Each structure stands twice: as structure tokens, then as C-alpha cells.
Length: 83
Image (cartoon, rainbow, N blue to C red; front, side, top):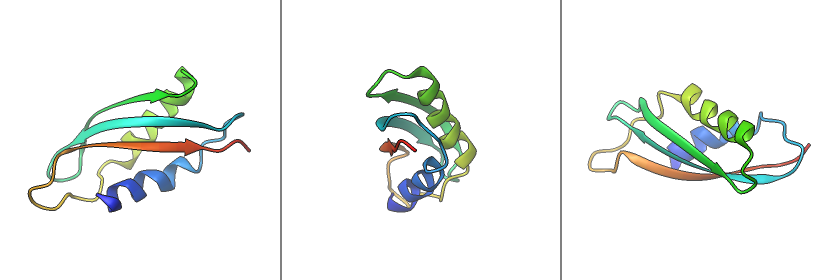
């Protein structure tokens, strides 16, 4: 699962934000790493940032395939830093 988290976090660094915030991402994926569903909740209730975070996960698909007997869902807290 660390590979999946790293895959997502690399892409999160490209999103410019006005103030630092955390977005919690919740997603499911199949055995090939294809994202099936994703949702987001930001600490600031910023709908635009949540949509950008969801897009990051969707663009990251397929994720690195999970190893056998690993859950097909994951939550990742992503910190977006102000620039």
C-alpha cells in the first residue's frame, strides 16, 4: 500500500493552493489497480480543491497493483501546501 500512497502523493504536489490544507481521499480499486470509486473531504470544505484531489486519483489510475490478500480500498490524507 505504500507504493499506492506514493503514487498518489507524487501527483498532489502539482496542485497550486492559496492556503495549506489537508484533503482526505477515500477510494476503491480492482486487482489490476484500476480506480473504481473515489471521494474526498477537505478540512476547509473547499469543493474545488476536493474536485482537484479526486481528479489526481482518477489520473493516477491504474495504481500499482495490490499484492494478494490486500484490501481493495484505501484512505490517504494529502497535505496541499500554499505556494
